[in-house]
Amino acid sequence: MRHSTILFLLSLTLLLDACYKGKYVDLVVHNARIHTMTDDTKVYEAMAIKDGKIIEVGPERQILNKYAAEEELDAGGKDIYPGLTDAHGHLLSYAKQKLSVDLVGCKSFDELLVRTEKYQDQYKRKFVVGRGWDQSLWGTNELPNNEALNLLYPRTPVCLYRIDGHALLANDAALKMAGITPETEISGGIISIKDGKCTGLLVDNAMEPMNTLIPPFPRKEIKSAILEIQQELFQYGIVGVHEAGIEFTDISLFEELIDTKQLQLEVYAMLFPSKANMDFVRKKGKYRHKNLIIRSFKVMGDGALGSRGAFLKQPYSDQHNHFGVLTTPIAEMKRIATFCEANDYQMNTHAIGDSTNRILLDIYKTIFEIKPDHRWRIEHAQVVDPVDFVLFSNYGVFPSVQPTHAVSDQRWAEQRLGKKRMAGAYAYNTLLQKYGMLAIGTDFPVELTDPFLTIQAAVKRKNGDNFPAGGFYTNEAITLEECMKGMTIWAAFASFQENRTGSLEKGKEATFVIFERTVQAGDTYEPNFASQVFIRGEKVYSTDY
Ligand SMILES: [Zn+2]
Image (cartoon, rainbow, N blue to C red; front, side, top):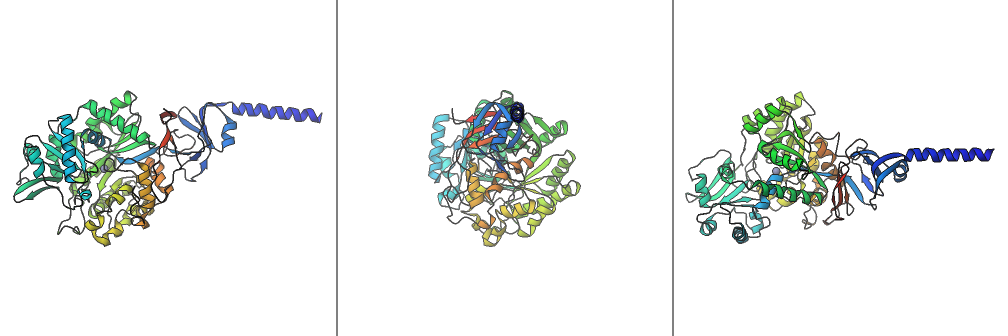
């Protein structure tokens, strides 16, 4: 009797187990180290996925026993993270860069000339555009002039952008077309003049006449360049980009790629605050088309530190009586803030100099008083007067930072700012302590897209060449976990998407990446790549094929 009871109970258990196991899902991923990026920062071994969403994340046996899956994926003990987001990048500029003369990494001005000639031999463009030069790699602090370009291209207009996109070098043919003379005055910009003649160097707003002159690349070429970039991002496990500045006329380009299912990246696009773009917002409000989301503006507060366009409270240490420029007048920034508030749009403003940061913090105070959880962002927040840090917490301002900038700018940052001001420069840890979150990106194509360079810069404060050996102002380093949060859950918060993405937990989208190697910040940079990437449960990238 007792025997049969035991048998009965046993078969009941088996039956129950089978019923349990009968929970059908599409995919079970197991034998992994799943970094959930939730508040308790738990790491689990397995997760079950159905209809593109996570049903459960938990211990290996718990998930395997409970679910019957159409497909089981053994992750081989590898690290799994939520798909990464680059919280500040430029897909369109990068696409255009790919179609222009590639000047990134030129070691001398001569190399710049050689690359330009090579490109033009191949493409024979009517208007030559190049991007990516950086004079600090030529062993000089001096910005270049156009004499050699004028000799090589007396008639064809040539326009070469600096790596930060805040300065360009144009030959005389291009200056003439743009109607720029030594007498031209453009507020918020610098037209460089020597011996009564334009040197060809245009900074910040002075680039505008040239920007409008440059003929657009064929749409087809831009689209294929964007898809090329998508592949590059997938190989690093990046599934989302906060596109820092587009026109509403660019939307259709993204939508065509999305509707043909070619663009799978999630694009959180910020609009420039032009009249046409504001009209678009008045008509459409917050806008979403599948994986394209628009509900923010990108405002340009000032220029960059490299080209001395960043607006500082005190003069530059390496240029007498020069403060940089505010590229958008204060009254205009306030007007944009009022518009954003009225339309429930997020305001994301580029601010590099300490003066610009302070001006913005004061402007953002207004939104904080109405809506404490506004999440308005300061992009870069690169040089902050230490007395102003507290305003990030007082007014709830979201810092959006790019750790690779710190280790790229280390060559000249101290020259521009002097030692004392470095206390508030590239101060990612301080900013994190003040706000409690950071949105982390790269600003590609200003920097490379590789998030492992970001990790190295954020955690070790070193560049890809392991420089400097001891790290650059390491008191501002953040932890690996904080850095990963900045590229996942905090980036989701920074774009109001935290309810559906950014962490791996029940109910959220099954968007994740399996990395080939352990994600870590070692003493030296070691490359790492995604082996598989899933977006809403669908595999979009795999090194298997
Ligand atoms: Zn940018």
